Length: 244
Ligand SMILES: Cc1ncc(COP(=O)(O)O)c(C=O)c1O
Image (cartoon, rainbow, N blue to C red; front, side, top):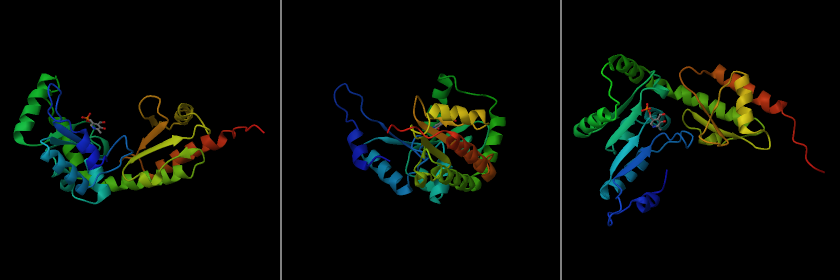
């Protein structure tokens, strides 16, 4: 989470022909920051600053229920201070598809228009909404299980030689880690895992960072199986020969 000073200095005033800042976007939990969370107090402080400076605040809450579960708070604590929130019914809530925008009636009405303009409208959305409702009503309370499994995965990875991970920072269901270059190239590691039935995604581009996510269809036995595959690959790799 950037500091309030960083947010303040990034707000562009209305000067001449330059565009002014109009929106502060927060993301909770934060995908690229390994599923880290921001608290209600941090959200309130950032929103207060933005509102004072005339900006609206949007929360990208694709994984907001994971953040609430990790912090042990009602989701309203994290969404109350902002103007609009988007969250996904897929991901942890496990619906096959779907996202929602929540906010004031007039903003949502305008968003519907813009969605239509952009070709995003869907007439027969009821069947999708039904699965989304099941996710919302039945999957929230079990998200902590995903977090426990992610922590077990992170702790297991931390014990494998050749893996670099800040296991203490794993607080939700995303586990982000690196394979030390001296141990193996990340792409080669990814390929070796895939050959053994374990598909791991890589952050965009040529990033050395890999990403695993726990969810309702991944149990503790799967975590242990994944760890065994990964440690097997790295322990089979001969130690690099060092020049004498
Ligand atoms: C942080 C974040 N925001 C927004 C989205 C968009 O979700 P959707 O495609 O369901 O609208 C995603 C999807 O992966 C995401 O990870």
